[in-house]
Length: 443
Image (cartoon, rainbow, N blue to C red; front, side, top):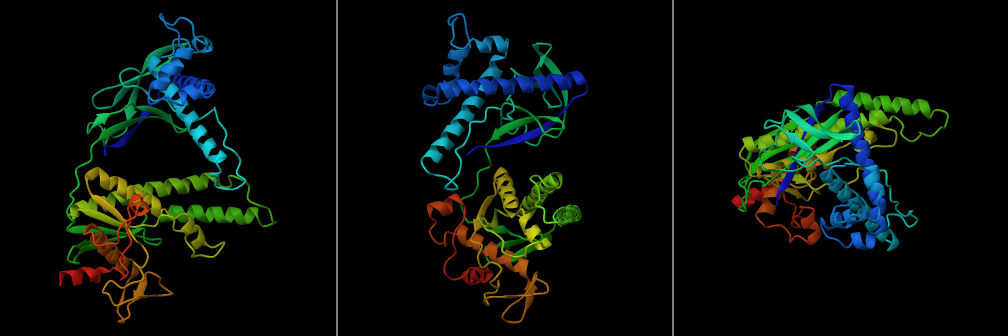
């Protein structure tokens, strides 16, 4: 299956004239999408039954007059959006139809009783959406060969003109496949041009991998990894911690202090309390997920791994930590699912296989097959085997995850159901699978 990755480049807006031209272009495009949504919803029995680009022909027959079609039903669009680029108009039509289709689907689900809550209110059709225009290459946007300069058709002085912008950023995917239409976006601070690229990932081998890189995601240590081969030999191991712990702890402490000060007289926290600090925490977690996943994928390549095994923690909810304690907040900010998703997406790009194994018992069972372990109360990262040997709990879990990954790729796990296949996970046999399983198999 082809995959799409995007390079995001920043537009160097050097004058107030360029800034105003981009603002006018975005505002006029959003206004057109809003008006087209009313037309699409009015004629939805016809528009909704169309497939693909057929909706463009149906709506253009209602709003756009030509020499062969001098009279249309809605003359407002020709007067209000004079000389609007045809390619940009068709993008707006597909954008409006997509939003109306989403609303109709959600409303039908609500009417049929498929609701999150029994007394949930019906969805609403929001016409004023924060959408961004897709610029057809060669018609609304032109880029040079090395993507350092771009010409974009913008709204300026009541006309549509070409305006040049310098681009800042690095292209990691440009030229690897088929270029798609760029997207003009704005994050509130700067204008950006997103360049999607569609390419075929490398073909993955169907034979069982010889080496698997296992990743155990944790709280104190962001990721504990180990390289294990099919015979159960550990070739490498290590720990990766977040590099922004000080910034994260400082922001969380500031939020706690502000909350104590605000609620000391019994008041409740208002909506949007410490919004900027929470946004910074979210951006820090997103950046760390990218950085750590990149390190793990590079290590898998350096050690000759053909697959990556992680824990299937989808739907897992933490129970540790009492209310109003830092541990509760740390579990709440844990980005384990985000990190696993980043690892999977980066592994697909380079042709590595990725599997999410059954997580229960990976930390509880000893990797040497001696049975359950006992975690230290004072230092939760350490554990004691039934034989009396002390070991690192996260490394023990990483070894067991690698063993379950090998068992999955060898096809000796329990038969996967449809739900399990959709989650890329598998249950282990009734006997807990640990690193000793590979040793017994080798013997």
